[in-house]
Length: 264
Length: 334
Image 1 (tube, rainbow over the protein chains, first blue to last red):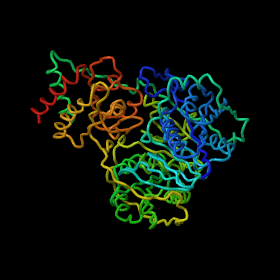
Image 2 (image 1 turned 90 degrees about the vertical axis):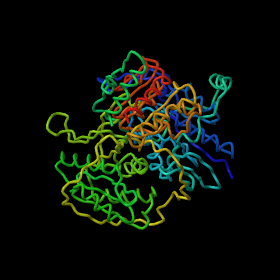
Image 3 (image 1 turned 120 degrees about the vertical axis):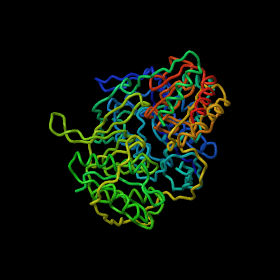
Image 4 (image 1 turned 180 degrees about the horizontal axis):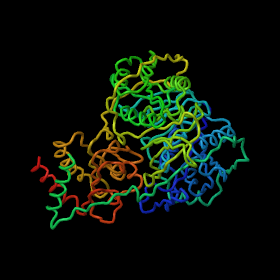
């Protein structure tokens, strides 16, 4: 079987493991400000891991695509250190604040420019705006079969077999390639990358290209920004915590038991 | 004309709870628009479910029956739904953020060239009188791990949204004057691109069905901590239905509990009646999974932890001290 081409879409987001105190809301400008380091969306890391698992089994080329107004190449180089072959950064001022459909449009146009592909993998959702749409819309735009919530992906001949999450357990499904699969965390965390490998990748020459909206055939008229009417700050969501005090833990436990009984 | 249409979901012949919630919010939106409210059901034998839907007072129940629609197949359901929504042409089309809605929502929105907002916790109609008021659907959803609530509006018709479960009350029975309308979709087997080989049932904890969740995190220190939480589960089970154990990502990463217990962005997003967070500091990704719980109780030895900011009740104390005492008190009371 000839080499298969896998495209992994990866988004950089503020670290979702950051504490709440690092997040503030600028209600006036309708922006969420997260003072946390940028990381690759954890589900997209799962998608890359799924691609790497396939590459262990057969000849495969992995291309990582990442889109944003400005994409940090230091964050995304991790994908190369982990084993991806090529990294394409889609950077343009026009790519800021796009809605899910528009992001999928840009990715679809970029994938068309790449040309040959067998499998497109995305995370099941992103960890910032939690929309869970881009992957499935991308599949529709590329007019290829879509499979969501993959726990395990295997390739036989020209078909892809996926074990996907199902409300009652899991479902095994099969489709012909090219196909799009959205990946869930059950696939496993992205493999460990040694510090040395990471440092080498950060310094060395790497196969990274950067495309702006002029570099590929992009249907710009389709791009739309998300329209936010109002953004409420976390203080509106926070609650006035009533601390249950007592002379001794015994008294606190008694009071909490009464609270719980009252909620019955 | 049907202004508001919802996709109902049927399980073992009757409407599921998520559908009853959609019936409630859909009906309210239709009232605000002064238009018709309808339900669409997809499957192979739907008469009982359609009659049940009618008892909640919609104007119409569209019954879409086809032998090929007996089990959920995304390709066939998507094609059917696309045909139906085009035919009915509603202003608003709603689904729940279920297994079905999660898959069909984005794909259907793309095919209908409209925009979808997923995981909404509230929906309302922007008035039409004042400046900037356009009568569009306002879609409220938590973003950035639930640390902000954003209200969106989007172009495109129908205006589509998926609703998070357990945040709105289910509909109550109403005077039924509506009718059942049959629609037969034009589908055949050639539309199936993804073939189902088998469905394997697993014994999984359905956290989204819990009324009470007792969740443990890094603060438990080790695996044995969950045994203390189990004791609390046992005693609360005497007073509440469906008391389950949840956990943070750390507890799964450390191998203390299986992933189906995980609450949060990479686990299950839930809003039970009571959420008891034990030794969970409250990272963004965990809070998104539980911040909509009706009552939140936090137990943590660190008074400065984030969990207290979203809690209704808090106890600053070591859980190994407080929980056994709490179990005793609850035993006495029950």
